[in-house]
Length: 103
Image (cartoon, rainbow, N blue to C red; front, side, top):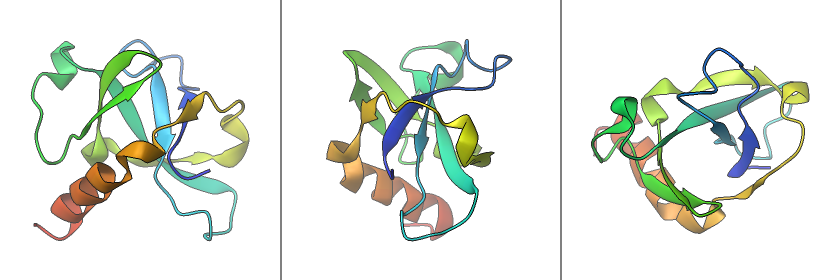
């Protein structure tokens, strides 16, 4: 489930962040999943590529993974996987390292 993309279940934020990606490793048990929203690249909220906002492609679109906006969601709210951005694993880990470790 790590790096799988889902439709954003929050109708209030879906316009700015149409998708969320599971960032949490599969080995962690529980009913919550750490997710990061995906913002369309170039949108007002996602104008700059930084180390904390890795660029990914999903379903033909360019998105920035909003690592600083990560939060938890109940696993049950993540219904149908829309694909994976596993191919961007290295970029995602570099962004997490940057945010949490500083390099």
